[in-house]
Image 1 (cartoon, rainbow, N blue to C red):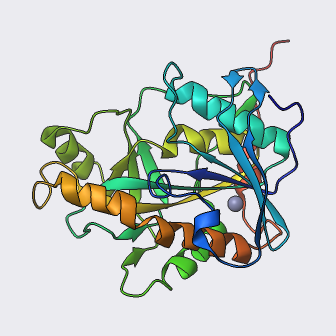
Image 2 (cartoon, rainbow, N blue to C red; image 1 turned 45 degrees about the vertical axis):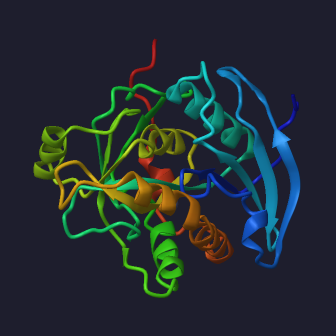
Length: 274
Ligand SMILES: [Zn+2]
């Protein structure tokens, strides 16, 4: 167990798309140097998952594999542990990736979506670190990070990239029923997954920007056609390097000053005890 959390400008939460590779080592691009591995911290919410500290052309990145779910640790607790560590590290920008199901029938497997909004159908809305802030969830996905992610993702040959989309959050861990997916579609959802919330709330709480890159790994139930496990597996194992490279290129290109309003959307609570 490590005592002090190193300083890092960027927090990176790996999802299913980079889970199968050793990230960032497996990407093999220059200017990346891994400084420490297996960093586990004692948090008020239990021991954290292991973090890796690396730098990309001098910018410090603290990364973890969120999907390395540990038995006996709830998703809410794991998220608190991760963001407690990010807060201690002074993280200003959080970048996440994951695999999602397509609710919008115009999408197809392997498409990349950079969500610009979300609808939270999960039951874990009260997940917080206990800070007394009023969190305004307007513009929750950072307006400065999203265009950078889009530009870098759009460089991948032959890949369709969407610079907006509404991400529907469910608890999982099972997938959804066709009737549920139809309700999400009527509600305006484009993609469905399990990660954006509570991460986006916790990012707001620690005063960090948040943006993410999601790859469509299957059609949601009742959309276009039944999805096949073989294809899901193939995407899981074969697309990791593509996603990993986009993430590293995005880190390189992120502006260092905050040209967005994310930090202004965290206000002191009015519900103080007198
Ligand atoms: Zn921002």
